[in-house]
Image (cartoon, rainbow, N blue to C red; front, side):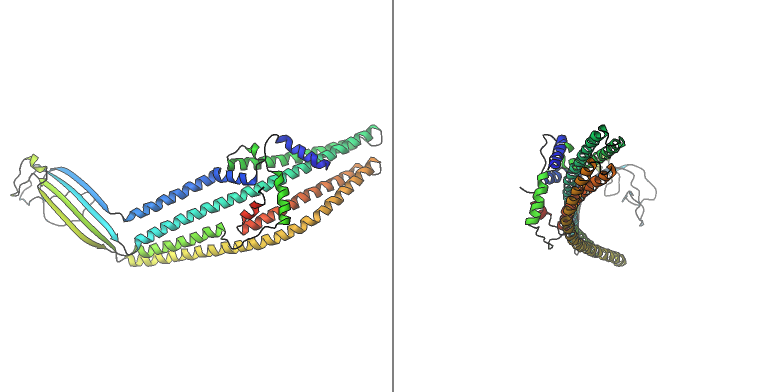
Length: 456
């Protein structure tokens, strides 16, 4: 009992006036503030915006163009392939070149609409939606992983609190031994070397305490960064450990293996996405139907009798025209491209299906392993208290014999170290039991049931 009070006093010394944070409150802060989650959330918004962009692919095109030109008007008959921006000259055919300048202008409104492509638009929309689903599932998986890390780290903080308490108790025992040695040395019953050995033990236990406190501080920094809080406020609620232990014994967690694990849901979404990609490939190489239309007007300073007029005559509108048509576009060589690409995409679908099955098998394996882990942890937890009780009795007996001059300091140190190890083994066994339960609920996607144990 004295050791327990000492442990609590030691821990509270560094955390004075700081109210412990409950696990559920910490999880809420992490969900709101974690930098990685904010990044993942923005990424889902980016994909959602791209989904809207895809819907705009079916909008028609309406282009307005105007140009005013100044140049010669010589022409020759004969076809040619255009090379980029090739000037068009539709002047008359003359025996000789005439470089007298001609002015002209042209205004065009051209409309084109790919109004039907035999399912390609629908396939694009479905793929965009599947990509958004994948990103949402990735976000849910990120939240689940972060939640799991936070709970695990919180349990580690509780464990470190207990280990620091045990370490403080060990330091107190070593100081008690040193005080007894000092009295025995002073009275001439013991040699002075025993004092040096006791000092060495105290120093060793102090170094172990420093390491435990460093581990605690590192966890506080990690959780503080995730929760957007100062690390000094990340103090685990030690009453939660008692609540957890009692409720687990009295009301075991009800497991539900039927809910879809976030990791499986993510790979299932990836599998659906590859199928949508295959569907898009199948529909992308089909014919495309177009509705086209244009109206345009123009003027030129060349008259109808092929005579040259004033430059000013080439501006304004002298002629107007319109054109409306239906068109179809299909590349016969796309048949081969489609066949090759579909074969590649089919293999990608198979790969995604295998990954999904792999994750389902891993989850099933994790569930089976966690169930075995819980059973083993329960057995270990029942056995270790006997070890602790026996080690404590042995230490007290050895210390009493030493003070009566019947044994040397080495045997006392052996007994004291045995008690210290037994106490550490008990704490480790207890938190391994908690972790086993946690691994079990994580494997079965039932973390909410575990969190219920931490509520008031």
